[in-house]
Length: 311
Figure 1: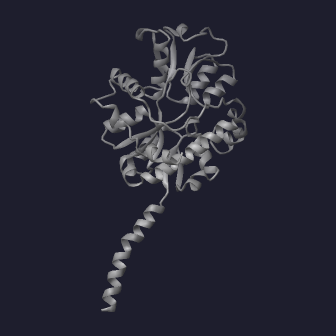
Figure 2: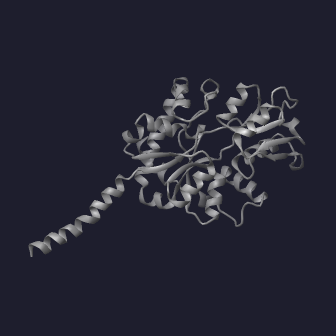
Figure 3: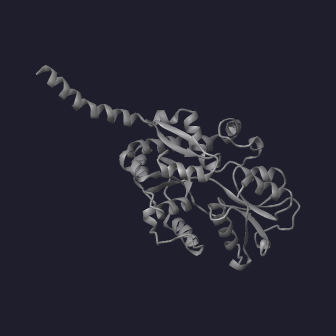
């Protein structure tokens, strides 16, 4: 009887022990060496995740393709991403949701000493981009807002970001759309900024989590966001104190230490219907949507609603 009772108690305790182990597993979030990821990197380095009650492991990636593959395979639970990637994932049957905007910057820069001095002057001229990405979306949206007709916008695919910057600086491209921190590096080397996404109201960078993780670990994601908000506030309060961090911890190129123009990090918020609609409309025009997607299916407000209780 005692042996049977012991076995029964062990069986009842096992699920609880497993649950405790699962709860202690870190929330794995993919990051890139860019401005959007900086608050997360600061939150990790300064212990803000732990202070907020979240166990988070940041997983660095060099390319968006590697990040997306890791998210879709379950190797990570969340990532710094963009609305185009979210729409493509959902369209492909992967249950992921954008849970907040991020603050990054994409800009169109003209090569040093070149003729273009405005977006309007780029009519008919090739602009270096990466095809079917947030970079192309940002570039074409900014050019269209400057009055260029679709026939006057000539995107030129240069997928390698470093090569795109080098071609721009060498005068082989009149203009190119670059993300931070390479946009700041190019400006420091003589390129002229014609327009930046944060100046033109473009909002497409997001943090994304799998739907399963949102269902199972909502409290942890809320704690994650409380740490994010605190890190954003600390960067905004003293951006110059983070210049060494950019290179030593965030993976920015050495030239960015002094050249990087810090973005303003805002309190986490969801993309607006207009933000999502602009992305979906552009994707539809490019033939990237194989089926119609409602804006609501790409977003999940629950984590921010929970996090805001502690703000």
